[in-house]
Image (cartoon, rainbow, N blue to C red; front, side, top):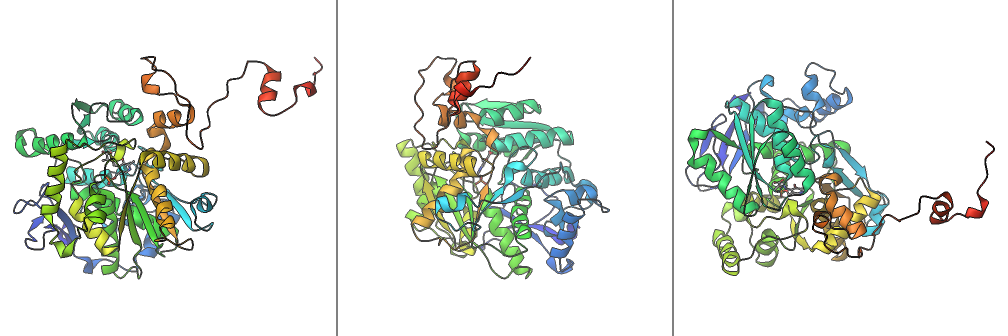
Length: 478
Ligand code: F0G
């Protein structure tokens, strides 16, 4: 199928094209990001019925392994591979659109108008598996045997599992003390070579990019979302939402923003669906950042930077990053997954916001944790970064940008068990990481804090703790 596909620079003044089996991190001519492009004319249609049939038959057809995948059953929408055998799949993307009926009114929406796309159901517990399956497929196409990424945790977990499954060497760069233990444990368990460097995610990404460009003798293939094949896989999150809604777009898609790969992929998905005339209406996009890691918010919302048909203001970005350097500002948030100060996909995110009439908001850590607790109480649960989407929905409702009648889909990007420390700390006040150092315990302050209740190992005490009357204990006949 590769004669349908090629790579193209997104800079409108360049638009250089490259063969699909070349490996580039960015445009070799002008350094801009690359897109994967297709000659759609040869695609069969109508396609929605085909996709749905694959889902209904649960992978019992000719291409069972591919039909089972929530990414590859939409394979006509990412046809960059040459033959089906090249596809590296571990059963990713079988995720749910949950009707969060009880949570909807709590944040100001009508019941039935809030859905949570639960990407925590992926094999490694985050949306990253959607992108990794596509990037590993390309890595296999080009004969790579070593793959690497910088990560705040989930990318490394996903890379590590895919590398292990496909017999490649996985290398992950993580910042010291910057990664939730659930995620670190995955990378270690799957046997990835894990390099912990002093520095944050931005420093790790800089180094791993240097490794792939300045040490070509190592033959390391880059797996971060600057790799355009990653984004091809992440488009499928939008296809699954549409499929679950009978191919009717919601009013809003709300997603947390870190390195901005996901929102970029969503924009590309809708640009292509429009081009293919598979969809009439484009949902609006809201990207939510943590207040302590908010470069997109600063540039887009505060400083008014727009895609501007590809001629966006790069000087404004440089000015902001120079300010960070001057003031020694580092990204800092409890939502460690999105603790990123220099997102590589910024231009594509601006393009997505332009196409989807988007907005960008920021939420502080306390708000993120309160909304994580709400998702735990009324949804499938999620890690802190994911809850930024629900917190953002509420903020936009309060601002009147979203109306209570709107149909809203929030993306829950990662599983609750990814960062149990944050959850335990919220509900109990115990800082798990500091237990060994005997740091003093603080009382939990969260509104939904639900600490365990200490009870004596005694039936009467247990009944009392549960609101019952111990005097009514029935004595059983022996
Ligand atoms: N939510 C979770 C749970 C994440 O792990 C990430 C990114 C994001 C949201 C942000 O997505 O980068 O596409 O804007 N995690 C990366 C990692 C950076 O290394 O795991 P984005």
